[in-house]
Length: 172
Image 1 (cartoon, one colour):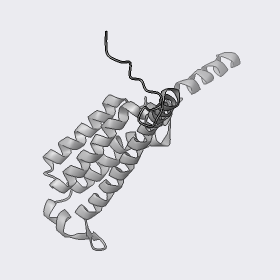
Image 2: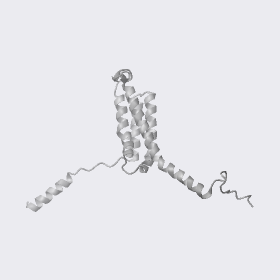
Image 3: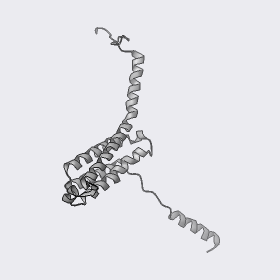
């Protein structure tokens, strides 16, 4: 093997060893992750206080998914939505459900807080954060609606406010 062919084969090996990042999770992947968390709750016999908070988070995520583009491609908020569904939420719920129920709900693990209390705090934080992100995703359309209303008001006025009267009279 000559020097040129050795050099060429070395470059080919380096190209083969390059890391290829996995594709970004799709909406289906995110919803499937939420369904897995739901199944974990059913199988683990989670208390209603946990289930209700997880449902709130899942609802916010599901409502935000179609609007992720509004947040901007690759935004921190978009990442947070996907990571919450695929990582943060399953990890928090799974950690709690792996503990014996009676022990998790009665024994302090963090100062005076039980595992249940710690989980509820985590779920509250995730819920508030997902609600804020949903609001941000909807805000641009809400602002566009307000701006359009102002445009229409300037263009046509309100008859109740003394603006133009759009009464066209009786039909003929």
